[in-house]
Length: 305
Figure 1 (cartoon, rainbow, N blue to C red):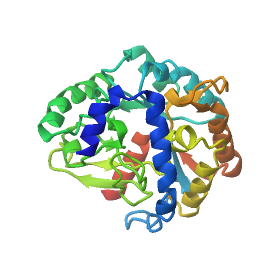
Figure 2 (figure 1 turned 60 degrees about the horizontal axis):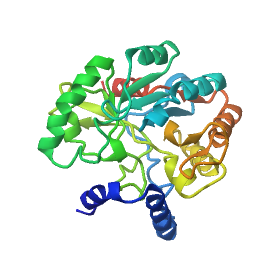
Figure 3 (figure 1 turned 90 degrees about the vertical axis):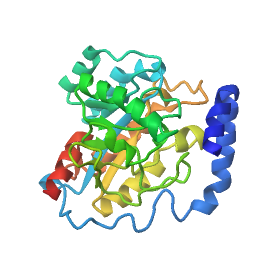
Figure 4 (figure 1 turned 60 degrees about the vertical axis):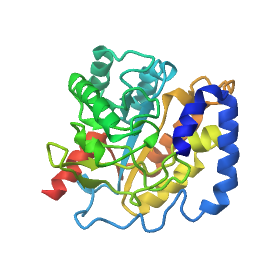
């Protein structure tokens, strides 16, 4: 009920005030959640099917990007080039019908460079899961874009999720959940730093692989909490690496200040992201599997056969 009310009132609340209120809410709740965020003890428990990552790597390292507005869309190539220069690949999730047009040329460029992409909802209006009938109505159009773009990956806007309904999508993997994040609009974490199979009769394949994000989304620590270094990511990554898990992070190009100008209250310095990637590259060289979501999903499904 409160979530529905928020999305009704959201267009009438100034953006800066929205962020200020969210920041105050998070800071007030931090002491309460210190035992479950950003690390949830018990989430490191290994699935029975898991005996290690490909080529004996210590952990999987998955970079994803939700592209929410045209501002972020215009930065996709720049972000791709930054990651490629540092020796990484990632996957971008695009909203099919919201403020920018996804051309096949861009999707081709991403794949030609070793990157990938998926579908990120339909409109990004907070109403995808408002009812089962509404979800199924939109699912038809989402499936259209999945086919048109030749992708089998999905992530819902705002990390809203109903893993049963999501089975109506023609996907191999979904990324609409997280191990632990009490600050999300729908805060029910899945409690694991590993992928898992979602059995689903709606899905033509009998189910799909769920890939939860396991590092805090960039927006919370760097836009709302105004952290000035990637320490929160690094600390969690070290813990996941020690437990041979999957490091999966969602970084929005919309919120990256590529010029390090400090002019926007809802952007963070690109140097934070660069420092994080350089830390991984320097401290874990040869120990991580930098994989695309589709490759992790394919690997995990092979463990279940």
